Length: 73
Image (cartoon, rainbow, N blue to C red):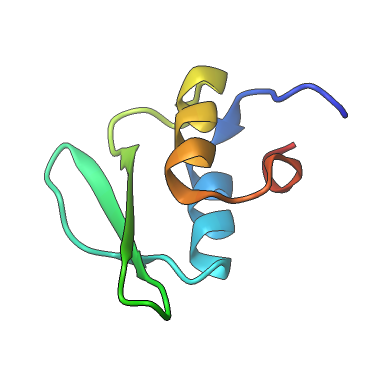
C-alpha cells in the first residue's frame, strides 16, 4: 500500500463527486452529503480556503465516508 500524500482540493472533490456525494452548502467548508439505500446519510467537509488538503484531513474524510484508502492514493 502506498503512502497517502496531500491532494488538491479539486482532486478530493472529484473523487467524492464520482462516488455520489453532492454539495450541500456551507460557508467556510464545502459540505458534501450522500444518502445510502438504507436511508442513512454520510456527511463530510472540505475546506474552501486551502487549495491543498493535508494527509490528516484526507484520513478523516476516508473515515467519515467509508471510501477505500486506495481511491485517495
